Image (cartoon, helix red, strand yellow):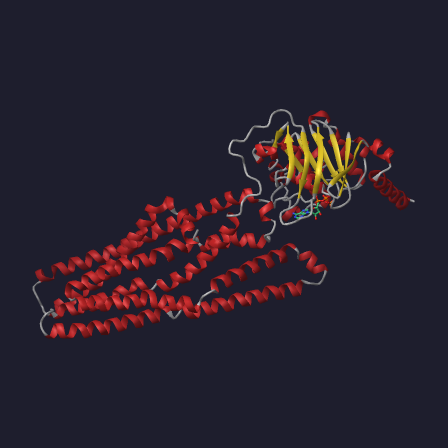
Length: 576
Ligand SMILES: Nc1ncnc2c1ncn2[C@@H]1O[C@H](COP(=O)(O)OP(=O)(O)OP(=O)(O)O)[C@@H](O)[C@H]1O
């Protein structure tokens, strides 16, 4: 569907407000024309020194149009701006709500700077759509129809001549301007997106850029992009600044032509000479409606591009859909993988291949295996970020495809190595896990996560991405947050990887102490404390190579035993 039509559909709830803005805009310009025409009539008539009574109608007209113009202009601005902002708010909320089901699967191909530009810049661009793209041509059309009709009362050639010059101002100049600026809006949007991306890289990667001595080259890239943006804006302005003089030229030509038509009419006495001045002034004033038209085409280009970029994302089919009548998960939290295979979108390689296992409620399972074996993919499928390509995943015996993804996520909490911390206080970061938690609960969670020293720092700022904390503190804070979330299934995806051995051991003991309350799944390639798990799944190249308890797997002497021996020999070697 055409982008413009799609954008207009979003404005449907505001149709009456937009119509009101259009009518007040038209009435404002009509009042301007009316004011100038009645003033011209009054001056011309007064020169003939008539009685005051004969001037009365002109005086009333000037007063009426003068006041109406001011009041209507104010109303038009009020209505069009408040409608535009309400509409923008609606588009923004619509965009966020449509974005949510796409994360993370459909958004992983976008740079964060690009997404930011679409969320902020592109939606801001749409601010112009209704007030500067849709309304001006309609206002101009209404004004000109009125003017052709008024001039037609005096003489139809006047109407015809004005029609030709209006057409030139309404179509000729904007089309020429659109031709000269074709593609610039797209280029500008591309350059601005690249700018956002490089600026975000610059801010977030400043430490790395400093370490590798790449600050200067990153700054040079940013400068080049800024220069490109300025060049494009300069070229746009060159064309834009020619609009007004060109419309004025058109107006002058229309005035001369009007005078040429009026001359014989006045000479022959067909038309009272007073009206010639009024008509000329009316013709001049009518061109006010055409001044915004070239900019309207330019904005149309930019709005179409912004709309296209927004719909590019929103029109993507969500990877995971909520079923129409989702079932409710029951009290049984057992998770089952039944012959599950999965390939990431765009990849032909199977990240998981015919994987089957059961995570009984209250049991502790470790998923181990070499890097890239598919361990985190199991967590991603359990969070319903993706659907399995083959096989089924069940929660309490129900296929999770029949459950609301939010319900599944409420059942499965995760702490991963990459958990995001918000640039807020420790308390606010914790409350994301459970907004209702009181200070006592927050402190208990911190304690269980081995971060009791933070109990009196709840109002301390965590820094951007939690940068005011050490890597280990960040991980423990994420763990405390997940504990507050209190999901029956807790996945620790390399959650203790940044911790020293003593802290890691203490936390794992805390986690094991959950007893039958929680199902615990620890994803790790560091084989420490494995004896405490009820079962260990060993993953290799996307399939389960072995499973059993630590002692069973050691006795088997397979991949697990080899990995365990290697890691512990290394530890012994480094200890000796
Ligand atoms: N978003 C993605 N898109 C495409 N392929 C992916 C994506 N995430 C992971 N993969 C691929 O899927 C395979 C399994 O990845 P996964 O992250 O599950 O491994 P892992 O066992 O958790 O590894 P590690 O221990 O290094 O974290 C890998 O080959 C990886 O390259």
